[in-house]
Image 1 (cartoon, rainbow, N blue to C red):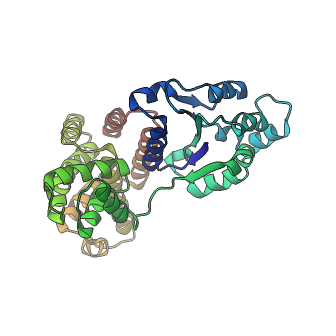
Image 2 (cartoon, helix red, strand yellow; image 1 turned 135 degrees about the horizontal axis):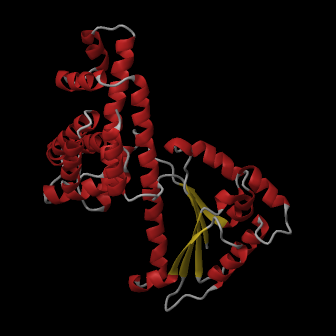
Image 3 (cartoon, rainbow, N blue to C red; image 1 turned 180 degrees about the horizontal axis):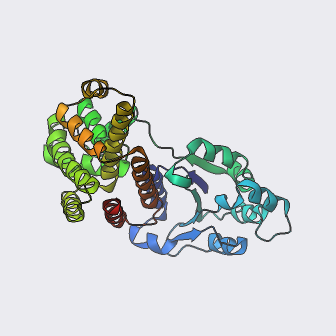
Amino acid sequence: MLYIFTGSDDFSLKERLKQIKLALGDESLSSANTTMLEGKNLTAAELQNYVQTIPFLAPARLVMVNGLLERFEGSKGKAAAKDTADKNSPDEFARALSNLPPTTLAVLLDYTTAKDGDYREKEKVSALASNPLFKLVSPGAEVKHFAPLSAQNLPGWVMQRAKQSSIQMSVPAARLLTRFVGADLWALSSEIEKLGLYAQGRAVEEADVENMVGYSQEVNIFGLVDAVLDHKVKDAQQSLAAFTAGGGSPGFLLFMLVRQLRLMVRYTALKKRGLKEAEIFKAMGGSEYALRKTASQAACQNMDSLKAIYSKLLETDFNIKTGRFEPELAMGLLVAELCGRK
């Protein structure tokens, strides 16, 4: 069986991979029968050898190939498709994948990434449609594009995830949780499990989310944001350590940093239009305390510096999601660099 998985929702993608790995039988033998290959320098002959290898004491083996489809995107992909004499052409790779033995499960992985940390789902789907290798192998494969969930669909996902873990959760609680944590499904899944343990069999309500997720994390994050924007390296590092020790996820931290930065950008833009502070507060909404904190932070920055910080946040998100850096290391580097900006 051949699978083709694309998209930037790595949580859902890896959940699907877990289901596929169940076909390998005994979990203790799964590692011996699982192979991860990087498609960038992989040859068709090597792929042929891997997919034809017989599994060890298991009914099937899993061969995952990351980035092979990407080799044949754009102009280079079209040129490779024409060169049928090339031993590593799309035809050769398709041949290796077309006659899989019944004991092999093969997965082509293609994470949707683009420059500046922007995840362009529609462009990736369009690129796959003209990808010569994809055209050859997709008719006989299970194809799934894992696009990020929209804000409207996140509460429903939380409810379904809670149900899978036998956790009861009210709809208002699910909505509040997504508002605090954002679209990071890894963080949401972790918080759902924590809330289930906290509720001890009863339904999770808004107050539980506020107590377990909202207040403590938001206080830590605002303290961290203050320290970063004031270039207080020691305070920022201590706040980051406290946030991590309290179970805070890098995804939630990035979400809240971006959220606060957007508020600062909006405040700065309204201020530039000549609006008075009372008019700005009315336009932005929210508590007066939070708005005054935003105004104080924005006063120390200009639009160019805000854009630079935003770009750095996107870069960090990109590095975490693509596995370039471990989340804790990426956040440590982010705080150090932002604190060093003058």
